[in-house]
Length: 283
Image 1 (cartoon, rainbow, N blue to C red):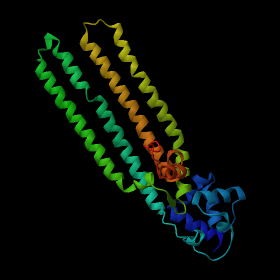
Image 2 (tube, rainbow, N blue to C red; image 1 turned 120 degrees about the horizontal axis):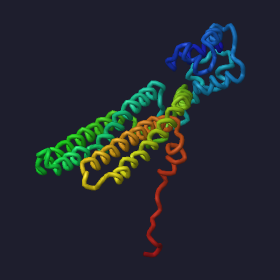
Image 3 (cartoon, rainbow, N blue to C red; image 1 turned 135 degrees about the vertical axis):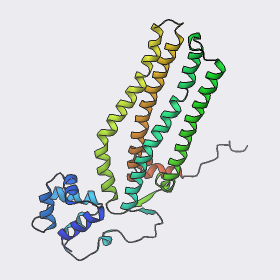
Image 4 (cartoon, helix red, strand yellow; image 1 turned 90 degrees about the vertical axis):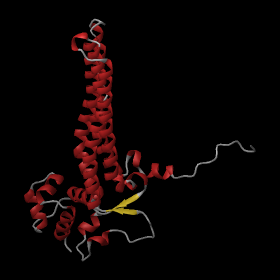
């Protein structure tokens, strides 16, 4: 099998068009078309990039001999490690991206859930509104519990959706061809978004203190206005935490697939080591 045929096979296995592969390689679609048409071959630097992108060796790409794609994968050496396919990896990333939004929303609901109770309580203190304390407290608690219930339901539903991929966090695994290259590329593309969202999230959490302390400039007897300022602080904090959580979950999903950071093979192996007893010898 010549290089052109191997490239076509790898690209189709990854589910990419020529345009998408060209974007990954930072070349034109015409260049990819010429590679696949055996009209030209990429230089050494691009050949190395292709091997990293598809998770195969450069020898596999360069040697013109008849061999199937699976031949580039080492034979089974008795390892019982689970193998993650490209389809499974893409499904995992899609689920994590979707549940990241849901979890961020659920956390936001938990943070802002006391707002109604606080505002209604402050309104009940103003005679002009004619709202009894018991009514304000009852309505406020109902709304609080309703928001928390929705949040808990979202947490449970999100957990059920990702339960099938728990092994990616807890176990050491191997990846099939193309998985590491795909995850690394998408992580690199998401890096700018991740950094921006982390800055926005942290900034909003800090800015949430401004309305809280800003209430000090108003008279103490204006309790309703102070409560509204406090509610604004809750909303800003909730939005900020949402940004942090959503981007953090997506970023962690890439690290899980690549087994980097907190999910590296070294850390997972270390967590499996038997713990020695801390009891003093002889006691």
